[in-house]
Image (cartoon, rainbow, N blue to C red; front, side):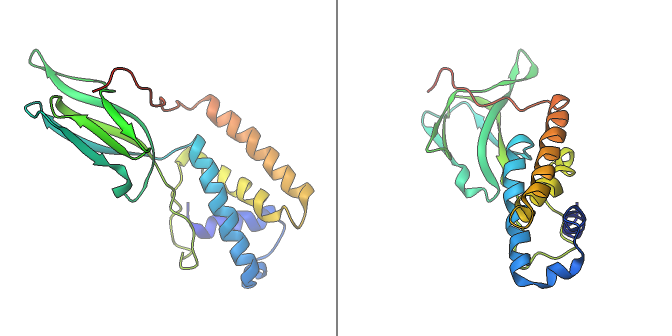
Amino acid sequence: MLYSEVKEQILSLGFEDSSVLTDTNYQKVFRDGINKALTFINVDFPIIGEYTHSLDGTGVDLDEIDFADISDFDVLLNATIKEEVGGRYQIRPFSNFELVQDTKVFVSQTNKGDITFYYRQRPTFVTVSTTDATVITIHYKAEQLLPLLASYYIWNDDDPEKASKWRNEYEDMKTLILRTTQRPIPLTFTGGL
């Protein structure tokens, strides 16, 4: 979804024309409303990133992975390991690691296989330099939700009743989409190093 499309839909939901966007105060309100909506929508409809770490099983120490070094990292969700068992490869859930301070993972080098960590990516926020041709980073199922929730934040000061209508429509549509969407499995810890 292009930034220009999001703005057009928000203007339409607010019953406004594009002249509103010549006001620098409204430009800031638009950016803030869209960014706040992106943050909230990304929790229910995350864009999933992955990071793979390979181990040969011969080490005796711990490997440290700092997800804070990954620019789009938000929250670790879960992990799998691809390992060879009896001449065949299997992909299984992996929890034999320690998560410290929400971003650092310690994995024993005695593990053997390719460990893939799945994480929720941070959305790319709209800034002053964002052009109309910029593609907004959002889960494809949630594209239609963005203008509704952003409109709630943007138009709330001008017309709380109208904003409330868009918030209610957002909640109804979100519920409908979530009923048919497979949710990522949250991270659980069993075992350890």
